[in-house]
Image (cartoon, rainbow, N blue to C red):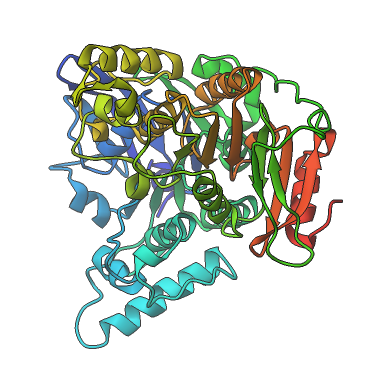
Length: 488
């Protein structure tokens, strides 16, 4: 293979455009990925990233423009053709079958695993790749997917994409791959991506965590309103300049409250420790309380316990005291057959119902108000919830809880996959609501979000091992408590 062939892009689009009715999703996009290159693809929700990815993987045919593979025009390009070419995708909306085991899901992705002994070979394939990318993962290939946490499912899907069987793995497109992973597991993945690149592989990394894009990608492509607005080496960007290119301004962290100001106040929420050496959980009116630590160490269990202890009921009462934002929108959040409007206003129905009839005009006004306040990108709230990008679906669940009058809102990593501009708007909204006396209990896998909180409880092995407040809420102390059980 000569030098010119090595430099030819694994895949490239030339002036690709795609419309859905009157909506122009991408417009004249030229995009290429070279061998041995990691390209960061960033932009707000609705910027056109998902449509471009679906063109690259053969799921969508562009209305105009071209697709080239290794410098040659692609004839009859499709998902099957993309896979034969070595292209794999890991979507933010995970595609694993929940009723099948890890090994059985691996077989679906790798059709060459057939004949006698395919289960053993599938188990070996996925186990070896999980060990390579995520040492100490603790996932059994015989486990059913429904029994795994969302982070473990994401790890399985990533390992499946990087596993080689019937076709070589040349290019992997990762859409928000660390959105459900804690910092230590995310670091394992990013380190593996660099090793894969050094061995000649290619990666397209889509992430709203801009720091990991800048430290992992060789080049960054910025999309806005369906077009490429910047394409430069990653070293030429900073987080601030990248955000400006995306078209938004990052607000500085809102000032935290003094963690001791409510010391003598009656807690609005309390959960006593059940183990010796663990700390009680306490939250006061108007606080934003964070739950931190390595994923899967009891944070979600605490949120559920708080919900139930506060008189919560999954069938909401008119005077509900607590609202809940689920972390896994597919399992616990979305009603996929319903519209965006119906999904958003579900929690408001007790307040909008009189004599068994729903005030539809009031429902429409409430939905339109929250669409504007939280920035849900859709031309029609009557569209199906699954017509939205993953980040916009998450915004709907977030708005569903905030639209209620509940004085306490519990949030289980609610902003996975939401763009940085919207995150900053949400942070500002949370602070404004807290200033009015609302209490938030917020579990997040993102350190920037943890650092927005007034106080933070750090979890380790299912119990609270540290309480941090004020200036002590920082990445160093959270990580030290997560691993050692005591603040640094």
